[in-house]
Length: 59
Image 1 (cartoon, one colour):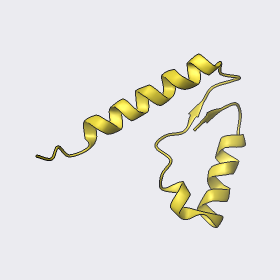
Image 2 (cartoon, rainbow, N blue to C red):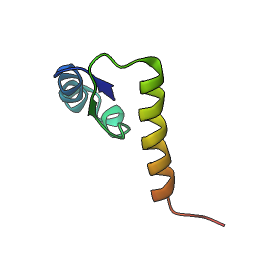
Image 3 (tube, one colour):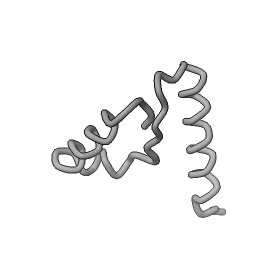
Image 4 (cartoon, one colour):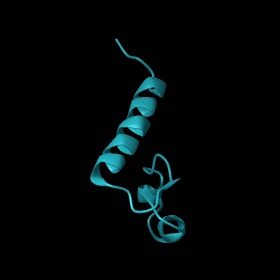
């Protein structure tokens, strides 16, 4: 989750109290003031690449 200021933290608190299943799916929270579309994509790639590396290999 990326965004400016404290709005994303307020959303995380809301999810904690009202939608814990959704809260558990949040990979990371980053403060980014007014990110461009490209910046949002770059942050998503960074965290999903890291999550893929941490996932146990099967096969």
